[in-house]
Each structure stands twice: as C-alpha cells, then as structure tokens.
Length: 256
Picture 1: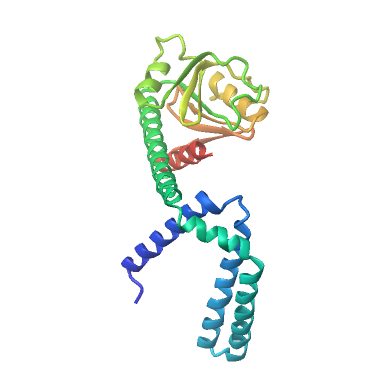
Picture 2: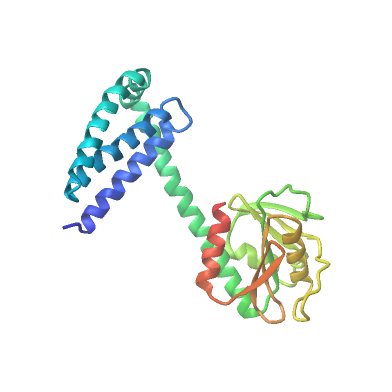
C-alpha cells in the first residue's frame, strides 16, 4: 500500500531529476533526448497498465511500438547519448547540481523571510492606523513612477518599513518600491488616478490606483483613517481582511 514514506521517496526522485535537468539539460542539445526518453517512458508505462485494465491487444500494440522506438532512439540520438553519459561522469557537474539545489533552497528561505517581515509591518501599521504605500512593480524602470525618492537598496525588514512610514520621518508620505526581494526606494511619488473614487479613499488610494492603471504593478495600501489593507491591481482596488490571503498575495508578488 502507498504510504507517506513512498511519497517522500517520490519527492526526492522528482527533486533530483529536476535539479539535474535545470543544471545540465535545459536549453542544450540533449533536451530533445530527455523529452524523447520521457515520452518513451510514458509509452512503456501505458503498455504495462493497459493489460491490467484487460485491454490486452492495445497494451501489446503499445509494447511493440515502445520497443521499436527504443531501438530507434539509440540510433537517432547516438551523439546526445554520448554527451549525456559524459555528463553523468562529470564530478564538477554533480557539484553544480548540489550548489544549484542549495541556492534554490536559500532563495526560497529568503523569500519566506521577506514575506513574514512585510506581513509583520503591515499588520502593525493596520492596527495603529499608520498609512503606508508599497509598490511591487513588474518593471521598476517602466517610466510610470514620477519620482523614485531616496534609494535604499536594503534587505526587507519590518523595522525598516515601520521606520520609513513613521509619520515623523520625511519619507512617510511617499511609496516604498520593493523589487528583487529588496527595498529599492522610499518616498517615491506615484501618478494619481483621475477615476472617480468613493469618499473613503484618500490620496494614497488614488496614487495606488493610478500606478496600477498605468503599469502592471500591484500596490499595497494601508489606510491611515481606517487601518484597512487593500491591493490596487489592473485599475481596480480591493480590500483584504484575511491575513492569510494577504500573505499569499505578497508571496506571489515577490516570487515573480
């Protein structure tokens, strides 16, 4: 019976195969070979599964096709096979796989830490009714931002965000620009939307909406009056009450 231990083993195999593919196969001449082998593997799998479903004739047919293609692949992809086997014996290459995997784990860990730091700051500002404007641009140099303000280029932390948006600091009225998992700028000036907004929306919401109308950026707003947390995206603004949904939203934005 399939249990959790089997699942762990399958996950390990998938991770190892993916790491090997990204490090050695992707965007190389061997990529076609790997795709062919994957398709052939599926064909062999179906040739064994179909007889279990009492489809003996179809299973036998696929078995002979898979056998024929297996011989054909050896002939057609002989140069790629030679290169593939050479890669398997490359010790430095295996070190690159391990390094690439470690980098992926490290990047994921750093991203999660950044998400938690932003959530901590946003939740505190919402509770204390501290106004905030945070931009997550797809292209930081899209020409939409009127003035970038002060260059920060610092690691994301709740302390830094809370300091920037503290109402006694000179940068608190502008927007923070977050890109490449860093606080890039503070005190940025965004274009104001000319759309008709409800009375409860102030200048920060108008700036967030204006930025989202003229670019692919997503803008997080904390209302100074109500403490509400909203996201402006594609010319629309939506309030978020669930902290879990806010966390998921920020995680997706940082992962782009």
